[in-house]
Length: 163
Image (cartoon, rainbow, N blue to C red):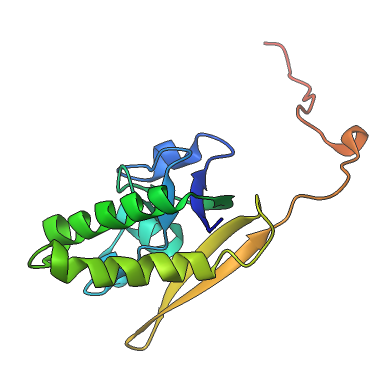
C-alpha cells in the first residue's frame, strides 16, 4: 500500500499561526509551488510562516507544520491527486484539469518520495532563499524512546511578595 503525508498537530499552535490552517488528518504535500513567484523578504506573519515551515493540506489547502507518514489506498491517492489538480487550476493558473494533472502527479510523487521512513514518522520542512533559489530541507522528528517523567517540569513555583 502506498504512503503519503498526513497533517498532524501536537498542539493548537498551527491554528494560531497559519491563515488558513490545515486540519489534522488531511493528506498533505510540501506545496512549495505556491511560493515560486513569491518574495519571502516582503512576507510577514502567517504568509512567512507558511513559506518557512508549512506543508499544504489537500482538503482545506491550509498549512500545517508537521506531517506524519501514513498508508493511503490507491483510490484515496487518486482522489487527492485530482483535488490537487483542481486547486492548481483554480488558484495557480493551470488552464484545465488535463494540463494540471501531470503537475499534481509530480507533487504527489515528490511527497511519496519523502515517505521512505517507517509509518508514523513525523516530518518538518524548512524553506529558505539562497540567491535566486528556494532551498528546502526535510527533517524527521523522532520522539525519545523513554521519557523520565520525574525530570519533566510543567509548573514552577514562584514566590510572590504580598502587597
